[in-house]
Amino acid sequence: PAARTVAAVDLGAESGRVVAATFDGHRLDLDVVGRFPNGARPVDGVLRWEFERLWGHVEEQLGTLGRDRSVASVGVDTWGVDYGLLRADGSLLDEPTCYRDPRQVRAMAEAISLVGREALYAATGCQTMEINGVFALLDDAHHTDRLADAATLLMVPDLFHHRLSGLRATEHTAASTSGMYDTASGTWATGLLDALQVPTHLLPEVVAPGTDVGPVVGALGEGPLAGTRVVVPTGHDTAAAVVGTPFGGPGGLFISSGTWSLMGVERDEALATPATAAANLTNEGGYAGTVRLLRNVMGLWILQECRRQWAREGTDLSYTDLVELATAEPPLRSVVNPNATDFLAPGDMPSRLRAYCARHGDPVPETVGAVVRCVIDSLALTYRATAEDLAAVTGEPATSISVTGGGSQNALLAQATADATGLPVHCGPVEATALGNAGVQLIALGELADLADLRRVVAASGRLRTHQPRASPAWDAAAARLRQLMTADDQAR
Ligand code: LFR
Image (cartoon, rainbow, N blue to C red; front, side, top):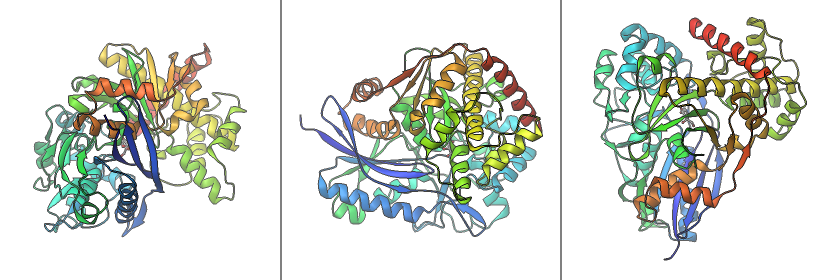
C-alpha cells in the first residue's frame, strides 16, 4: 500500500512545530515542516498566549506541507489547562490567558475557602494545583467581566480544531486537564462549578480522541488542504507523549520531559482515593479510555528561566554549556523542592533558588554550574519521591522509567534519575508527542490497529538509549532531605 502522510501540529510552552508523519506500513517517519517560538506575555495586566500569531504560523506551515504532498488528516496537541473563549459568532474574545499568571494562586486560595480541597479533588480526580483552568475561570467569573460576551469555552487545542474545521467541542484529554472535568466519568464537574459560583453554560460537548470531525474548511480547505480531514488527536500534549512512549514492560513509568516533567503510570481506570489526594497525584484522560496517574514536576522550566536570566545579565549559555558546567560540580550539595510555589512564575530564577536554599539552611549555590547541578539533582530526587508515591498508592513497584521529549536528551539528568531511583532509565524518542498525535490519527484512518501496534512501530522506528543505575548511598540521605522540604512547602501553602 502507498505511504500515507498526516500532519501533527504540536505546541509546547516554549515552541511549536508542524510535523509531517509518514507511515509506509512499517516505519513512522517524521519530517519537521517548521518550528516557531512560543511564550506568554503580559497584556492588559494578565499573562497571555499569542494565539493569533501561533495560528498564523500553523496556517502557513500547513499550507506549505499541503502544497508539497497529499495530507490525509491533521490534528493539534498543545499544553494543557488553558482555555479560550468564543463569542456566539465564533470569534475569539481575547488572547487566552496563561496558567502562570499570579491571579491563579489567589483564585486557588479562593476556591479552597469556598468548597475545600477535598471537594475539588473528589469532583475531578485532578491534583489541586494553581495552574488548573478552573482557577482561571473562577477568577474570570468573580473578578473580571470577561465572561459577559462569551458563548463557548474551548481548551487551547480545541481553538485550533475550531479554526481548522468549525468544530465547537472539546476533546476528552484536553478537558481532563481543566480541573473542572471528572476524568473517571468523562463529564464536566458541573456540581463543583455550581458550588464555586462559576457559570457552566460555556462548557461544550466533549469528543473522544481519534474523532474525525470533518474536512478542513476555510482558505486551507479550499486550497492546499483540499480533501484533508481534521482528526482530533489526544489534544493534550502529555496524553500524546504517553501514546508515543514505548514502555519498558510491566511496572514501567513514564516521564514526559519538557517545560514540565510529567511523571506517572498509565492505567485502565482512574484512581482517586484519600491516598492519591494526599500525594497530590492527578488523573488525566488518555487515549482509548486509559488514564494517566501522574504528578506535575516543575521540570526544565526552572533551567529555561535561569538561562533567560543569565542571558539578560549578558551571559548566553546553551543547554550543552549548562550541562557541562553542572557535570564538573560535586553532586548533591544543595537540594530544592522544584514544586515549591517560588518557582512557578517567570522571573530571576537563580536568585530565587539561592533565596530558597538560604531560607531552608542549605548551602547556597553561587556559580552557574552549582545552580544547574542543584536543579538537576533536585529533579532526579523529585522523580524518586514520585516513583515511591506512585508505588505506594497503586501497590505496584516501578521496574523502569521511560523518558521522552526534549529533556530525554539530557544525559546528566537521565543518569541522575537512574542513580536516584535505582531503576533503568530508557531515553527517547525526543518527538514522542508528535508521534503520539500522528499515531492517533493513523489509528483513526485504519493504518494502525491500536495503541499497542503504534507503540511497536514507535519502538522500531527510533533509537533508544538506556542508563543503568549506579549504587550510591548519598542519594538516600538527599532523598530524605527533599521529603522534609516537600512537607515544609506544603504546610506553607
Ligand atoms: C505539558 C503540560 C502539562 C500541563 C502543563 C500546563 O506541556 O501540558 O501536562 O500540566 O503543560 O499546561
